[in-house]
Length: 285
Ligand code: PAF
Image (cartoon, rainbow, N blue to C red; front, side, top):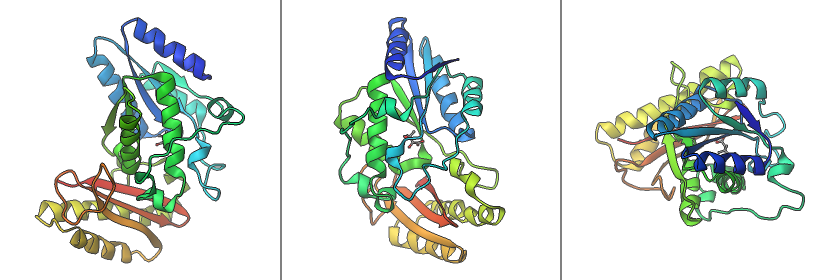
């Protein structure tokens, strides 16, 4: 498996693949790869195999512009060698691992802002976060021109922002969303789970419990967002160590709150477990 370091190398590789008749799938990541990322790479590999032939690139880049000044950019887990081993084992053809200077050349002054959506859900508590995400994803999609890019449903608001950005910029990449991967006890996989102490890990289970509870309520016929939120708020309140950030029922495309949930409505939660901010969600039945 080749490791590409520059945008020019990624562009050259991708164009070469396409000139050979291969489709190109891209899995954008910030590294610290876990089974959730593995499922994205596998999905890309499976879609590539369904095309007559296809290639898969995994990008590994801890993107500074999506972290706030007091967030965890400096201590974000970095495990490049293990990440490359996982990417290779899951069938990636190349890893793209640029430096910050490569993606943000000196004097860089161009950013992609998806207005409205970027201030909702995680964007409300992490100002500037989605501007950083949209900017780096745009850079990756423009460089690699992939046929498909693979994202996890766990970052559901990110998915909405990326879909809007791809539609608005008329990029030719299909956005493929893959299901949330969970630990056996329900905890959604996240690179930030490594920050949790044993006690916090146990407290963090309230997020997946809340999501299951909302799904069950919706499945039993409860469609009122206020009732879904009220039920789950109590579940959160029972774990006093947790600080709720948001409990929302929104349209997945616009991230605007809805009063009545319909199939496909997004139920999303975020909470601080100690200093660690975790998110989880479900697409309601
Ligand atoms: O989901 C992530 O890991 C990041 O937000 C992404 C999409 C790789 C952009 O840096």
